Length: 221
Image (tube, rainbow, N blue to C red; front, side, top):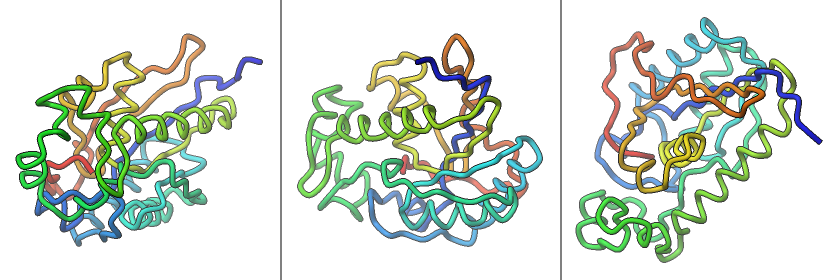
């Protein structure tokens, strides 16, 4: 049976800044909170979604930083938040809390930009491989699209990693390209339109709307 999504829209957003973003530390599933700047970014995101979209529902990763972001967004769009753990960032197990430099210089087996797809198959102790995380996110996407009504607009608050793999998938890019050639700042907005011809990415990583002018950290989570 074909899904009648009737040009439904999914607005994808990364969470606001955390202290670990500033310090370029790998967060994974760690319970990190937003900074004051992150809360300002999330508030600006909520205003932007209210002004630019007719959001009827918010879906979010259930990690602390996405919960905090989604709650601030929901105050503006005035709709409920559904939390779904499949929108979580990749779990990096015992390496969570370490800096990117510490992990990827000492453990090049995880560096996708260095060794390609083999790194995506490598599972950190206590964590999950990038390929496993990708399948989890794509399952979440499939379930989300299946539940869309015609013309509905849903906002998803998630993390950098899920955004990279999902947007790359929607564009038909290989995983290495998706992870190395795009950028998603804190509270960046990407928009996907569901058309009869399939999903179309119409906006990617927009942070120009932010009123605070805060600078996003350069990490991916």
